[in-house]
Image (cartoon, rainbow, N blue to C red; front, side):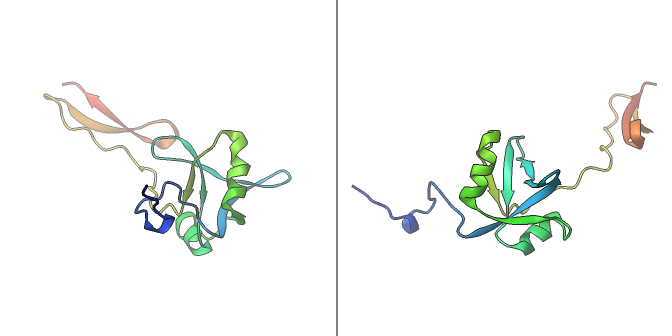
Length: 127
């Protein structure tokens, strides 16, 4: 039998962050609650950072946080049906300011118009 030790496995099946995690929170009526996020495919996830500096670099200096261990965070979000924990997310994308213009299609010319709440819309006018 091949008994690979945790450190020998190039991709351990269970990677557990060690020590304290910095968990972003939001104020609620009686204290604070962990902020929940969505993965790129839309699943809900808890997010934590290994250092306060990493949390600030992604969420900003004004983001409140609390220290929690990984098992405590998982226990906190489990009743909500959240099983995913994302540690040290590095990439965030800002919201698009305006949708890109569509390419002209057979004699039609795209134009920009203002939509609800001042958001630009792309409209195509026929000739």
